Length: 119
Image 1 (cartoon, rainbow, N blue to C red):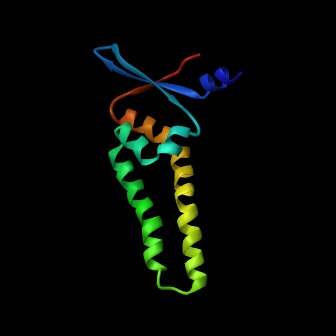
Image 2 (image 1 turned 60 degrees about the vertical axis):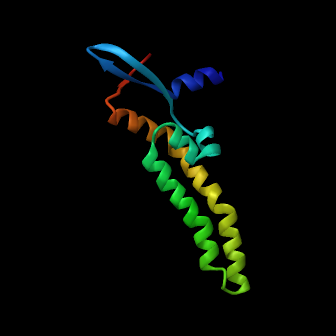
Image 3 (image 1 turned 90 degrees about the vertical axis):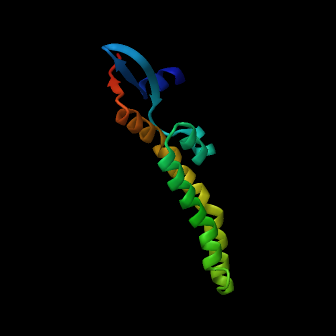
């Protein structure tokens, strides 16, 4: 049953050269666990350098920026900073895992890949 669900939730993007298939890429739809785990590295591996850099900067701001901004604050704000630093990377990773496949498919389309409908 899992294989059937995976096939239904996948799309194929094909790059043609002189009306012949040059490359065919299968892109799963939905949540991407590898992108959730490796986040910025996943984007870099797939050649999405702009997104990788953007998410890396967001990670830095969410963790170090919060720490520096609230480091001299009172105890209540220091506790808040600790909570933000603890949960921000997880929230960002969830966002990345949710959008990675769509971003990858969009980048393939920009490179000239066409979506195929398979039955």
